[in-house]
Length: 77
Image (cartoon, rainbow, N blue to C red; front, side):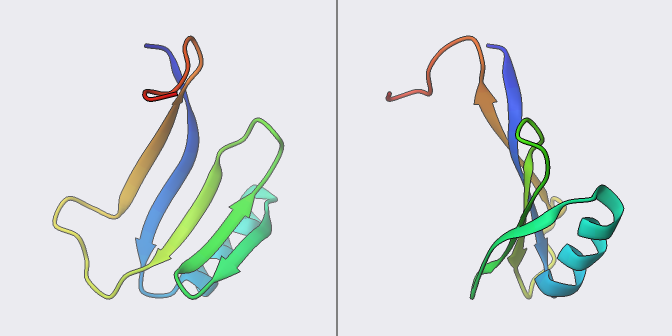
């Protein structure tokens, strides 16, 4: 299955601070914000980055890739 990265999810203790940093680095803008975290977006084909509030540091790291198939529909569609 061929896919593209739809979203990057980063777990962090401080979504606001980290999102401001990555907006400056990537030229992105805040596209959403709630009690769970902050979403930033760039160009239409660039992945959205989600900074999700988490007090714990995950054992497997803090980055999750949300892949979107490009050669078929999502499973269950």
